[in-house]
Length: 74
View (tube, rainbow, N blue to C red):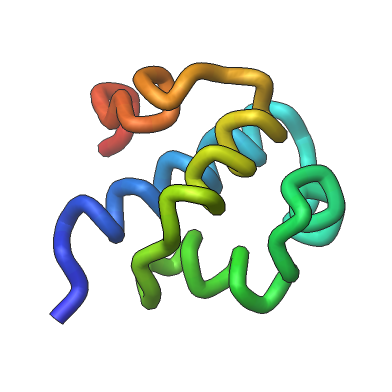
């Protein structure tokens, strides 16, 4: 069973990408995470590693705290 944290984390990544008008493929290149894995993360199908979390935050140029702030999700 996938946790709400995993689902919200994926939603947050997708929201940030859309706000910045970045495709999943572009973000995959920016973060160094394969597009197929990034898709699974965004859909909340898999939990990711702390290393990947750091790569994602760095690609967005935001802090880990900002990445885990889910207050802007529906």
